[in-house]
Length: 575
Image (cartoon, rainbow, N blue to C red; front, side, top):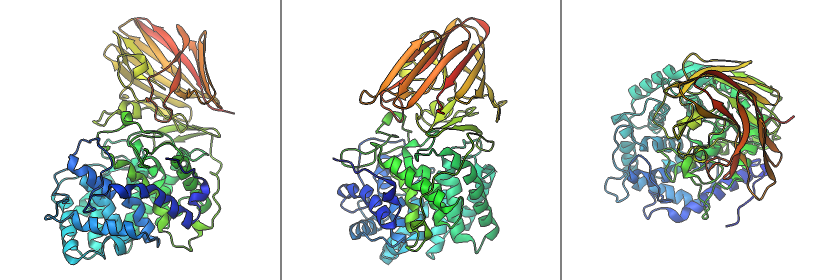
């Protein structure tokens, strides 16, 4: 099917933004179940019960529909679908019953958006339900109080669910809300940033949930808990000062961390700040971020031939998915449409979409633990990596690389058996005994500041590395001090750039240097110290999150048993 081309104008007025949302959800109508409580849009599975997958898919479009309704939007067919579905799903006698829950049940995530609807759009989500259906929904939502939630951002799901029950005059658990709020305080660090659970990462779950849901809570609890709500609002303003730096001038944001398939949920924080009436940046700046971000994302080939959002990042890609990504999961992205709930006379609708303010070309974000570089078209985060392993898929690649980019994204390994399958962009990769090894966790004694980063790590037993990343005007220099028990080969890799044959690109390796040029973009690496030479790797297709076909420039080094230092220059920023 022919794809619609989005511009900033498609999100600048309320009428246009509503049409853009409806364009996204229209293709779903053909796939709702007869009772309307389930949505079947794919055959792939997740770690949770297959029976929960169509329930998740039913619920997640509400992240866009709720603010659409709350802002006065009307679409009778979708209102009828969700009225019937919300009556059928919680009904134990209905064949499409969503069933009771267990500890750590995926359905708890989806309760949060039903709660969002009960709070913001009760006229479509709660009021039309017959009294028996309201009783069934109340009892089903109470399942979150009977079971355990994950000790991370999930605590917000229980809090919002109970807040919604309270708002509609139903029994709710004040104790569960209090325990969840206390846990979230334990996760808070400073500068508006939370860890995602004790020891968890600082990543997009801050704007996806931790900071944004605090603003939602403040909208409804300021009368009862004014000090807590003021604290959540203050944290949002502090967080925004850092988060602005994650966005490039074209609307893209840094590809970093897990849950990348939620795509334009990256912009949800700014949309929810508008909804909460919190000025985290000048109104025109916030509008500019949102309209550019949504236009950038919706022009990517992220749909299937029916117009359904796919699992992947800038194109369909199951390789990069987590075990909790099911066919309906990507519709969490619709959180970015929270601004549709703004009234017709809100100044957002007539404000100009302004560019980003003047931002520093090199910015250390101490509370996020990263050093950011930027030019006109790219934002790059230099990071030390994570300090502990977890059970999520591909976290080595999602947190352990040296650099992450809004323009080039990162690549996912298929296998450690060949270098092409390993696709080790922005990593130092060791070939030992026929296998390829990269950094996983970083030792706790790392240093980071405006001058650069230094950290220790080990790719496998017998090799230890101390890496320094020193920013330059064009990129950064890496200094690796290596202790090796083996004679082996090391590949110090730059970013993966597109070599789509439909665009102009070139690859070059000569002496100590290698480079890849793609359109206006270029990444070059040069071996400055050590036994090194330049090569260009052609990794397996579909390993990178943005470009299906890529090339990676590398400085290749002969590593000798014992101690040595290698030094690599990596250039990627434009003047």
